[in-house]
Length: 223
Length: 256
Image (tube, rainbow over all chains, first blue to last red; front, side):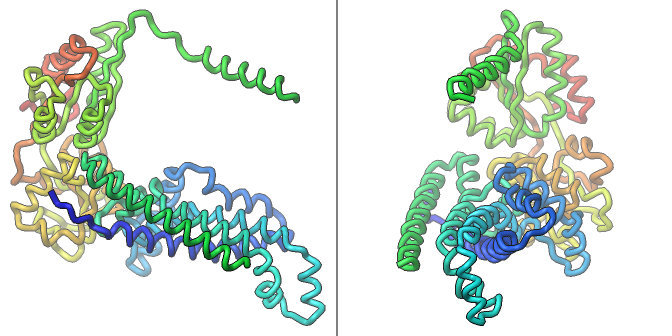
């Protein structure tokens, strides 16, 4: 039996989770700030829709993604016709699925964090002549950073463990879209317990390392 | 509402839900059948007919690729009858002592076909055409656990295409997932059994019957750890009885 463990699922998982978290943070923080500072019609409905991926089963999300991004989907068809690309069965598709499931975690934390920020501090900055962009960069964002970072950590953890939606959109292709959680599933299905155990330990180790490292980073940032 | 009231209400609701469950029929016996994914449509009809012949019996199905079904049985799943889509999986079950060897018998045969989406504009005629540039993705069951995938791999290897097609291959978790990929048009072509293609007529087109693999013969056997041995034996007999054969034939299965 082959005892060398192929590490490609680990690297793929880290790549997918990192890109998904980055996308989720950019979109989540922007949308959260908008919702915390602007009043507009349908705000709470938009909030509910943005939170939906947190409560819907991943299979439902996977189905939505197929309907929208599949080769014959609304956007997928256009992508295929215009650019000749398809997200189905690609690692980019896995990023899409992971982004969707981890987005609400950043969004919710960031919105709560922005709402906690003392609005009068922002006003003070404005009277001192700072532009709106500078107020956000130098006052609102630093004050809300703790909540945003906590949400980011949760999002990364969620993205790393993504399974259901990823399986539906990206498939389970070794070396291409097979992330750690999918590799473990396949190993168990094939009765390869030794490989499954190795991958399980690898995942647990990676998660502990990431948690410990992010804990350290959080402390540094907040000191 | 005060806590005790809330708890009482909760208990009431749970009690209410529990009482809605149908009371078990006296003497009702359950027979659990783990069957290859390609039997998903034929077996429920087999079971209905079997239940009519055996009042008080309820047949429960578990459909998946044969490989994962074998793993479930190895891990102690409460299964009475196992039907796989290839001999290899059943051989593995026999080696591990998971089935009753004497009870094993072949009950149907099938053919492997190459299919394309119903609205496909590709002019495929056989395996060789899969190497053409117009074909971007080809789906087949994961040979590690899906019999249809194993037959496909064997045929592609024999045709000298297995290595060349690697970048295009999309592996499915079962033959029915491959069928789904093709009928949605997510892939350009795929390998399924003729009986699967027949289920999705209109959504998929059969391009060619695939040759160059071992004969596709489905075996079924009693699971050694099963609790309903007598009933399971009768179910196995039913599969090869006139009534059983007729139903299987209706779904396109051949006789071994």
